[in-house]
Length: 284
Image (tube, rainbow, N blue to C red):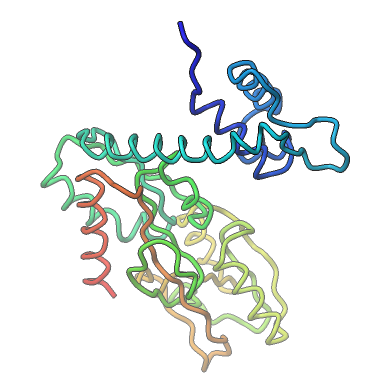
């Protein structure tokens, strides 16, 4: 049986070249370093020549002369492979869609979207994962069919559909003092970093009362009179209220909401994206 240039072998080769080392390629590809090394070794066996000079000076792994010949071929084959796979997937009816969204939008936007979606696609399961969508957006095609990302205003990535003002929020019975406690999402969240930066700029003393991925846990923490948080303005509902500049709270940046999908999304994904756009237009 003739040997073949499998995408797994070619992808490992290209990753090592792009990152400069087997270890970095493994981290980027979410693989063990030994797996990357084995795939490159197997590729060398298939093509009958070394593709990297492992004895070259410096920390970066260097291509051999043969590796330079193989690189554009490998990149072209991978582009063709991925394009073909996306085209075929676009014609296969989905039975389950994996969606990434912030905790806020998953709870306050997506229920109405999914209700409308199931009227046209009653047999398609929608699995929503919440978390840091600025990270999730890089995993479209690998882990997600669609990601509704909350990113910095002006980021411009994906299909930008709206701008979402952020607002300070507390329990409707609270009158926060100058010294504040914050209930926020974990480090890495844009809301949190902006909130801390703006309060520090105002010279206000703050402490983290709660750090959680759970919106309901944050809302529960807001029952304390000295605790505040930051929510997208469209998601603030009773018994919570927005805190204003008159109460000593600085303005916050706006988010940019963007949809990320595969280059050639299947019909169900396209419909879900359109439903999200429609729902956001109706609520913003």
